[in-house]
Image (cartoon, rainbow, N blue to C red; front, side, top):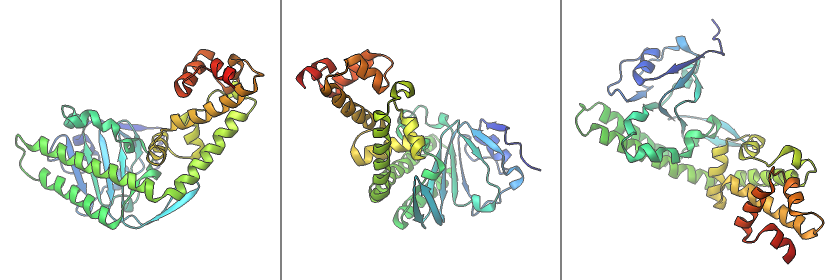
Length: 304
């Protein structure tokens, strides 16, 4: 029977998830690690759309093929990682190939009283799209696999007063390695990413030189990311890695350069420039311009 795609199932605990997947009760109430090489998967709920109230890290140990990034493609052979934060909608795969490698689930309550409970929001890859997964080299794959095996070994150890400390530190180490390898991915695939930046620059130039900017408003990070067909957080992390600036700062660079050109002609008032660029209020334009340039728009036009 075809699944009703409008129905979304919310799973609030890891124990409930194990029941939904017809798997044994987890050895720890706040953490579960599934090794699909040792686990038979029940596909009766395939196609179901679910929302998890906890984190998921998927590790594909053999992930061969080609993945699209914007207008380019990458070949990969060694496997990869994908990350899901609480509250995201996911669809359960309908083929056994969708269940490979490991799946790590951990509830926010596990890390709430630890430093990771606050710092986890800094791991941007939990906001990336599926197509923006982390693809690993052979060496990286071996290191990541060792982290999953260490977590598995800890989960098979009797729970004691140190169990949670060890598990949290192991998960944090896994996330730190992932951060390092994502940064490597940005740097080693500069050609494709520089193409994305060039397309972003062309798009922003077009937006700021259009006559209808006052109607369309200021370009947002979401708008630019949609145009490039990547997620907003991925766009910002990619730009920070390659240029040292966020997506918002990149947009502001274009805005300020266009504003300088318009102010230099002397034919428009500061308010007219602000409205032409898409600002609703000239005061907001004045504040941003002075912060970025060090002088007010009016002062800049007098200098010019």
